[in-house]
Amino acid sequence: MKIENIQKVLTFLEDNYHRQIEPEELEAVSNYSYRNIQRIFSAILLETIGNFCTRLKLENAYKQLIYTNNTIVAIAYDVGYSNNQSFTKAFKNKFEITPLQARQNRKPLFEEYIKGKENDLSFIDFEYEYKEKIQVYSKTLISNNYNNVVINELWDAIIEENKTIPPYNCFGVIVDQPIISDKEKSRYEVCISACVNSKLYLSKAIFGGWYAKYIHLGDFDKIEETYRKIYYRWLYESDYELGTSPIIEQYIDDEKSTDQLTTAIYVPVKRKLSK
Image 1 (spheres, rainbow, N blue to C red):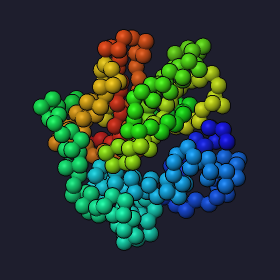
Image 2: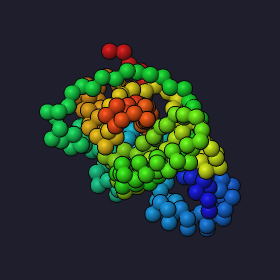
Image 3: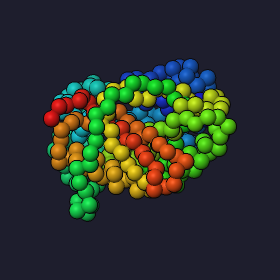
């Protein structure tokens, strides 16, 4: 199976994990038999299709529990559970806490992430920005906790593939939240606005909604410190509610020296709030 076919399957599952997916649907998406899809999917993602969809349900539910004020019952239905009892059982089986405990423990969860960094943190500035949907060419990478070495290797390959075309926009989609997700299965999407050979990529839309825009200056290897500041501000000065769609990074001034690199970090917000 070509990599673009498995990416199509992956995207279809991400868009439809909350409902029952029939084998025929995946066959139509990939043009392969369901047996082959299962075999290749498990080899690449190291889990079955069923386990992947269940994980998406529960991890997306966890995001809603800690990012939003949606009721637990509403969250259960939104991610595909028919009743709160089955949702609570599945959630506790995976995370060893109940949905209510997850919501109540939001602050300690993020305090652990920023632990030991408080003296270096401040309320990082941001601006609200509405981003229209745009079409991009995308490739998906699965790494352990967003390993920068592996991500940089993929970008090097992308840049080499497209070195003959004029400058294009570069984005990185942070699909998962490592604080709650299975770190070894962190999904990252390389997205570019133009390419030499579109058959090597999956076409998809990104953005579409309100975002809190932050700026990271300098080396990508230090970008996690900026994320610590982002979550520090959100945790202690909650002037907005986070959305559950992926964070998107836009890479600017790639040709400049490392200390001049600029990364715009777009964090989805459920709505724009006035102070």
